[in-house]
Length: 207
Image 1 (cartoon, rainbow, N blue to C red):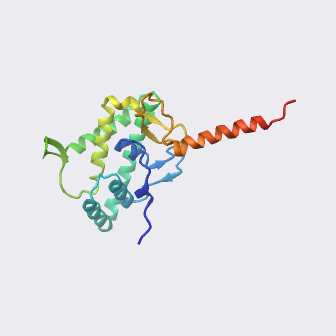
Image 2: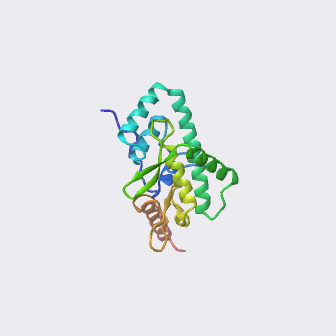
C-alpha cells in the first residue's frame, strides 16, 4: 500500500471551502510546507474535502497519467487561484482592501465557471450544479464559487487570520474574538512562548 500523500491529511480548519484551499500552503510569504506538489495532490485534496467523488477522483487520476502536460498546467492555474484567494481574504481579515487586480482575477475565474453550471433538480426544487464529465480543472469550479459566495456574504466579517501562522479561518465563536487557527497547535505554542518569557523574566536576578 502506498504511503498517503500530505494532501489527504490536510488539517481543515478554514470552515469554508475556499479558505481551506488557501491553507494548502503553510507560509505564503516564506513557504514552509506545500500540500499541492503535483496534480494528483490537487485531486486527492479535492476528494479529501468532498469536492470530488471517489469515481471522479479516480477518472482524473487516470487523466493525470495520460495527459501530464495538461495536468501540470491545471496545477499551475490552481496555485495561482489559491494565491489570489489567499491575498484577498488575508487583506480583508486585516481590514485592508484587496487589490483591483486580485478581485478582477477572481471575477474572471467566476465568469469562466458559469459556462460549466447547469440547473439540477433536487428534493426541494432546483439548485445550480455542475456539468457532468471529467474536466481536469473541475475541482476549481466549486472552490471559485465558494470564494465569490463568501466575498458577497454577511459572513465576510468573520474571516480571520491566525495570530500564530498565516492560515485563514471563519471565526464562528460567540464573541468573535478567536485568534488561533487551532488552540491545539498555534494557541498552545503561543501559551508556551508566553510562559517561557515569564519564567525567563522571573529567573533574572534583581540588583
